[in-house]
Length: 114
Length: 115
Image 1 (cartoon, chains in turn blue, orange):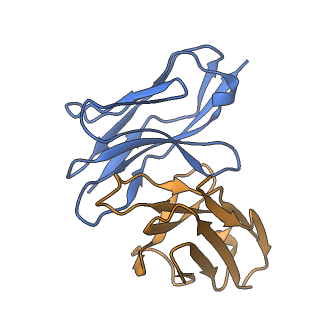
Image 2 (cartoon, one colour):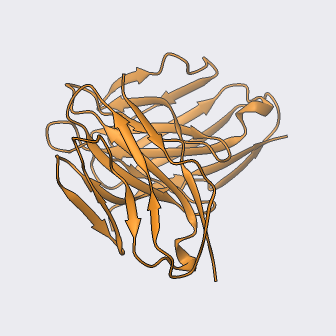
């Protein structure tokens, strides 16, 4: 079956530090990959996505590259801000017929200190 | 702006008293989902509708029911809430597999408290 393994948290960084949150996946087909962000008390917001191998998703300074050879989709940002403090979820959607479901990682709580 | 709306944002109910949470969407998406999310955990899929076709997850308790009277609205009914049902409930939508790429759009959630 499908699974997503995500870097354990919590992660605490100083403002302007470099961020990496690791994500690897197992899928039977050719999944689309996503990073969602959840701010306190809110729903999930799509941060970025990639739908095929070697695609790079980017948004708000965050980037992730779909690496089929290493089955990874690591999230990176060059200089984090206090406003980036949130929980980040890596997820996949299998391209299998009729499968509209997302498989989530466990989430990584990120705290940025001024 | 096209969006997913959940009402209410906060709901308090008593142990065993039925409660209904609502979700509406202006995205005209075929698929609607209900998730349960407990503190510091990933969302757990309860069920989803593909148009009018209802798909229940195998481990969703019978206590949870859902209705989708039309494309825009979907309801989550909890028949007899227990203390363990206190959680954030998230509604999401997506286009069908043929036209979308699996991306789901989430509402802001309803925080349910059971007293």
